[in-house]
Image (cartoon, rainbow, N blue to C red; front, side, top):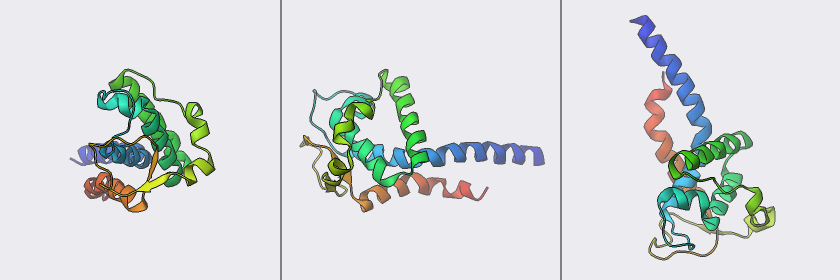
Length: 151
């Protein structure tokens, strides 16, 4: 019995350690699922998440604002892996979008609140998440895990 609990605790420690570093970027790209971006005709979710220039620019920009370097590195790598595994295509690289990700460009992006934009109306510019919008998404991801934090 003790061995079983020890294995569960060890497995949880590894799982939670990896997940903690991915939470920030996951919260960011999850938030952008509620916003429609202009571009090619609607494609499956992973194509939009990985290849839509406006959406991916927004993901990188918000990750710069809300995630520390370690979280960005791990979270973007995980997103890139998911793009390959589920979307069967590469995530647009930050370098490809660099001119739209300067400090000045990010500072001048429109900041949006949760449900401020109608999903039926695609936008044709990158946007940043407001702090309350980001926190809403982050807490949605973290809260279900809190009971496990005690292990």
